[in-house]
Structure formats: structure tokens, C-alpha cells
Image (cartoon, rainbow, N blue to C red; front, side):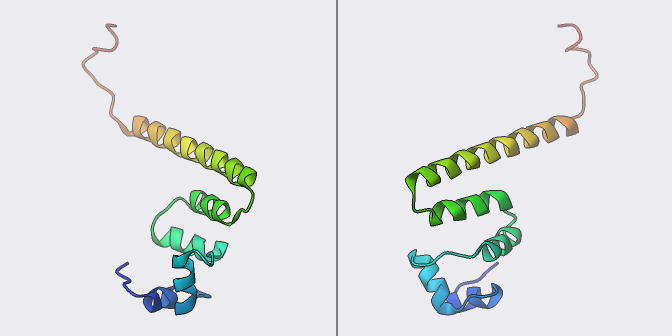
Length: 102
């Protein structure tokens, strides 16, 4: 988006000011789910993946982080499967009959 300064970022995202952005970058504060959703939409990121990663960052328990990581892997697998199926559905079939002879 071409944003270069913390103040430019803060102007684009509701509920943030320049200090908040600095704290987020330093790991002392987290985005809200709404802010993460806005960023995901603006950057064409998978919303579910972004929200799960946000929860992973906020989780204090290693067991919770591990469980969320498992959910994230399932999401990534499902997205990959959907992309593969969509790719196969849009690939034109061969007319040379080479598969039929196999």
C-alpha cells in the first residue's frame, strides 16, 4: 500500500495511533481481530489464517499455541486442496486420446 511511517499506518487502521503501531511492531501489543481482518482484506490474505496466527501470538499456553498450529495446518491443507481442484477444473481436457489408450 506504500505506507512508510507508523503515522501513515495508524491513519489507515481504525483504533490505532502512532504509539500503538510502534508497540505492535515491538511485540508489546497485538492487533485486535477487527484490525487484523482489515489488514488481511487489504493485503488479500487468507482471513482465517490471519486470525488463527493472531490467536497463536496472543496465547500464553504452549498447548493452546500447538492446538492452534494444528488448526492452521488444516486450513492450509484445505486451501491447497481447493486450489488444486480449481486448477484441474479450469485445465482444458486433451483431445488427442492419449489418456484413453492407457
